[in-house]
Image (cartoon, rainbow, N blue to C red; front, side):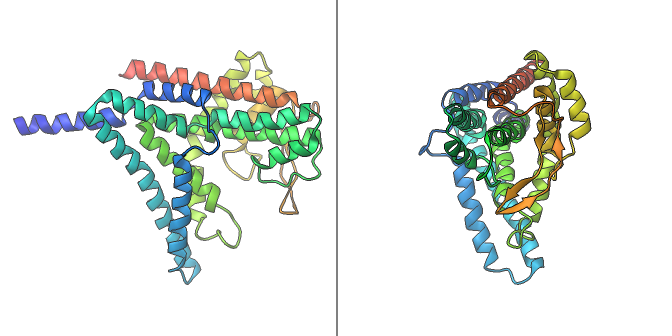
Length: 335
């Protein structure tokens, strides 16, 4: 009987560590809104990036064929993702043995690292400030830090459009998706998602170097973002109504253009943003000096302007808050 009680006690204790910890998520969101990602500070996501590079290089040494690279890609993904979940889980487990209050504080800090709302806003607002100061060259330079396309030759409207696209797309994978995974499994699952996302950004390319070893990471990232991207779109539509933007057009453009992207997930929040702001996003861009044809998203009702960067950030933050409030309500009902 005592053994049975101990067994169930351990199960409940473990669930207490990894269950939805809305307090930690809310605290982490507030902390991220204040602190963000200061330059030069320690950041666990950078450690994940270093781990990816290290494991990738070690695995490549043993690859002889394309088949070997595909298998290595699976091993790379499992190694990085499992480690990214296990390390914070063990840390929180040890902290909870000391005190659940200590565990909540640590998990709050972890959540702050996982979320990227303020860094997304700060980086896009650097582009905004440069454009407002009529410094197009500086705006292009600041834009180059947050987009993969070539920025030389972009005019003011094109620079603003690229910044808006980045904010809109990353509302999902930079904020809403991490929140969802934290709600489902605490900071450990949040870090697991960030590992999946970072793997895709580092090796999930369809070029000669990564077409094989990065294939699994790209597929896994699409799968991990399937539900969050769609949830983010609907919460953004609701947010556009809250902000008195064109929510009817946001829904219309979403239903029409949500698949106008090579990624099955990226255009969901972009299409909502384009509709809410009555602008056109997407379209052809240059990458590495080569013109890449991409479908447009939204209607060319008016030219994208500098102020749209602020509007996109308002949409991002309102969407995040609405999603967080909904998660809080759900946890209150369930727990």
